[in-house]
Length: 396
Image (cartoon, rainbow, N blue to C red):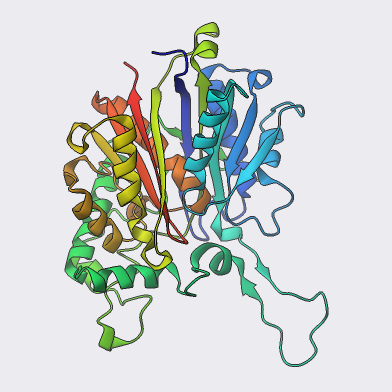
């Protein structure tokens, strides 16, 4: 321990809901409120002790001013405590942890609630009507597609960028389907063995009182044969030999996750129990069409900053946007696949955009704890051509 060290003292997530599934009437801010409350209760931190709240949220159109502030006040954080919303697409939930870490290292905060929230089901449709429609019909745009899943630089949807990578690096349909099947199998085993018990917080449906505590998206009965029969989803030209399907891609999902980051001084003063020490962060940029390779340079850089080599890292959580990009990332980094996404990844669990960065970190923390391991790295690719990574050490 050192005087400038920053620790994670609490971590939790909701179960992940399917598109139009269990959270179809529960706003992202309610999911965010749920994880913030639970994080505070787990660490026995009072809301008055919080310096700031930072939440990732991508699909904010029509969700009201500053959704992070809504979640903060909903969780009972005092009105005097500021909150703000972060959007760097898939990396948003992890970027909040980076920002909280920096605030603490700079002496501007001592306890920061960080995380992400997303309800992709409730993403709204929009139209520009400020000046009226002079001629022709009115088109409603799906903000889920426009703001979440379409690259503004190439006008390609994320699945088309995955097809680009599969063609460029000769990743076959069979390789992608086998990878996806393995992710589903790991997640199904994790559910059956209750591996996620410590990280999950129940979500209560406000009107009916229904309690949700199970990841909804996992396909426990999936087989390679079933995956291989699915049609391709993004590339319609058969001459281009398309390989990316709904089955070997991550889902469209709803959920939230949060962690509490804390200075060592506050941790000791309040007798808080650390889950992990933050060792290093890294970010990177690359061509937007190759956004799926964002983790490659980010992981290399975070290893350098942590002064680790890749083989001494016990576990990796690398977000599975698509099987094609995941396979290329693992190959380029030279990682042992048995250390990566040991309880399944986003292909099986789902990918609620603004929450996923925090979700992979929460899952990494509890997998290190469950398996008695020490060093871990979490990383995500980011639409627009970026990557982000964090290195942590479990505190025994």
